[in-house]
View (tube, rainbow, N blue to C red):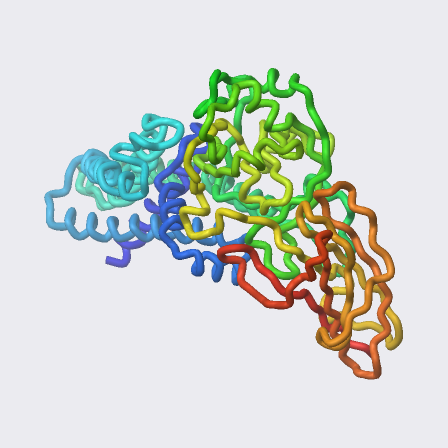
Length: 502
């Protein structure tokens, strides 16, 4: 049984890696990705929040790796059953017909059960990107599983001369292991490259102890995505549809969109999953066409409540029509003077100042005014439908638990309150009993960005100094000290650090 387990384990690993390789070539979704989306939709928001707090942006890749491991274990379990069953049957002249029959049956079962369970429909009828390519990816993976299974279990086939491992068996074994190693090499490289990409593209690169810059470089701008593999879109084939409750539906090509009158503005985006003191917040200059220009060209019909936005990856969101018609809401196609990267929503994305980033839909494909209060992807999963950015402030430098000589030392960080602006930033050295305004704040780059603040503080005689920060927004509201989790409205509370004085 141990040998059967190892053979099944190897075949299961080959199946997973083949899935990754074919996914790279074809670009279709896989059952694993459907399962990840289904699991995300099924988990309670508090569970998601718990995972984000413990694993941060590693939560999604960790979940996906766990699902891949489950697939490998499934392959090993089938290997045990296959070995135990075939041991009771006559030894065939060729192993592969029997193994491929088993893997083919598994494929059919998965298309009839798992695909519908995870929201893809029978045989992938409802899968984004088409059922044919979805079935092709799965079929290729199961075929590789069957081939490797046949190669490994076929090692013990006795040849015509009666030798334990004759020439035909040796050749079969060599070819089988060669195929398995090829799949491992190609698929393994893909998974390693993808894992590296996800780690680098799923977090901000802020270094604690280093003051943030007013404008975040593109490669350091935080990225959050529900996908394991983000959609790579050909701009020549891409189009933006404007439909719903409009007088004249139409479609914009990438060339037509970029030829429309454009505006450029600095906007800070913050993820609703950003914790107190977290780094899921960044600032960039965005260039694009005002959303209202595109909507007015179609002509709004009476009764519109929300404007719905759909994405290439199946994501959807909405904003009230009143906000959609504000001048600052953009369909952006450039970021800091460069075309959007794939991870930031190429070829076009929405930028909604004042709201958390979940409303700034990436890989935009459709705009649709509707007569209902539409609940988007995250609202259906328990998050707020009114994600107004909360007033936040953060200490960038020094990092907590760093050591400083006794005496005054510099402190600095950022503060942000969405489109309300920041009126002042204050520090406390006595756990919030008294507050003093910071020495210096930069002017905001626009009405929709953070500000950078700096100060020098002089702690008392204690060997451990606590520095706490708070901000007051442009409406005069002071940042609350009440700590809340990110679910469902975004985190709140004061950020503080401890500095050891020697």
